[in-house]
Length: 128
Image (tube, rainbow, N blue to C red; front, side):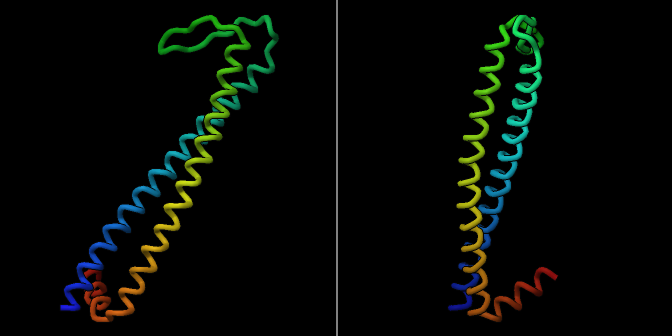
């Protein structure tokens, strides 16, 4: 009876571990994407700063290029930079939360396996 309860507990913990790990990887990918967008906005902004104010600048919209004042393009890139920083900060908070959740699940799993050594042996025999 207790052996069956431990197995179901293990299956639940394993499911939570898989779910948490998946979410953590997703957040890490989102952070990486936002950092790329932020870097791209920063580089574009640096290039725009080097141009004189009377230079014709164009904005890409799909396959079309539209004439835009330099100031408008700079404002857009600065906004993208700020939005990227905000999004990264939010995602970092989510990442820290998920890492804490993952460590809690790992601790729960460790405790369960210490309580029931026979379950640990069964798991080891299945994975080998």
